Length: 50
Ligand SMILES: [Zn+2]
Image (cartoon, rainbow, N blue to C red; front, side, top):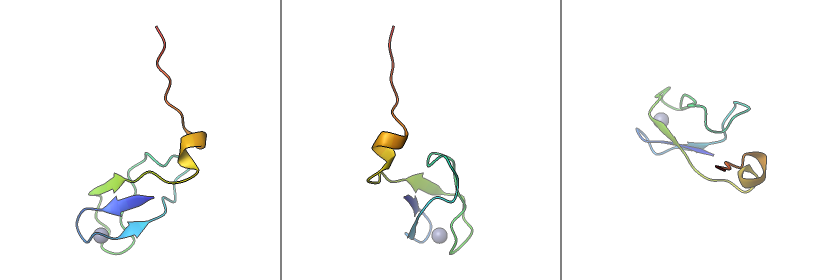
């Protein structure tokens, strides 16, 4: 899920990567932030190993 910082609208990211900044479908603003969803933890796991 993405959350628009301009109008507060929450929408599902249309991109394959949920971390890609997606324009708000309501106001077309790119000021959106990623909001953790249910299945995203499995889809994208950031692992840092030395
Ligand atoms: Zn918006």
